[in-house]
Length: 362
Ligand code: QUE
Image (cartoon, protein in one colour):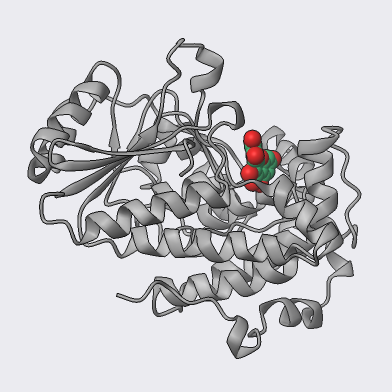
């Protein structure tokens, strides 16, 4: 049993705390399996009425070690797998991680996720399926995969195409392409979070929910704090205008034609991202609007993940951002024009039947 996940009973709630602080609680296969095992056990336990999901805070209180809720997945291990075993271990990781994402999405009891720190990639995948998603002053939310030659997975195709109607539908593609970092107030504004809490209300809410899970919503409402203004709301019109197209070439052209400071900054960001994975994510989000179920989305994302980890951009992106940290990836192809429709069709195609992703059976 891994100690990187703490799973225990807290009153009438199950309580899962991520406990790998030195990696900002990034998910390993062991952690994914331990979380799924606890959730499967509690699903059929009538004395468990809800599940709390947060990160453990280090005993010695080192603030550096409590910055993260969950910074992603163990992509360095996936990269080694791509280079050394043909990607088999990497595919096994994503298969299990997406099963966990789907188990949370379909969980019959309320799950309350506390995004009290860095919440990226794999962290988004376990927080977003929760019925209640709590943002805080420490929340830093992003789907930054285009920086490492991956695409926004863990169900992001679903979430980024199903934002509330009051938000521009182009916010989803914007977040996927740029990997923009949102604070807690921006998460609440975009509907990525359902609540915004500050200490001491945060700790009080956890204790009260554990004692009386049926009142989770009322307790979170009662302890909610006034969130600051969401900066992203001020840029929503610019996002809607400049990221209007599902063609990456059009978005580049729109940003290039705009001489504003904001457009210049976003253009520089896009020029540093993987053209291949940006094109994949635009198509993924556009198509996800028409997907019938979350399980179908995960099946699609698994096809993409199984193939994209073997593309050169993935090993190169993880090298540049997480291993050598030179932040100077050399993408291949280097420009959007280098990626054909036929290449995208190959990446999105079904896998042989025996390799396709499947959810846990109920
Ligand atoms: C883009 C990403 C990831 C990232 C940084 C990016 C990502 C990811 C991690 C990460 C961070 C800390 C860890 C770790 C992984 O960083 O997906 O194991 O300790 O998992 O710019 O997509």
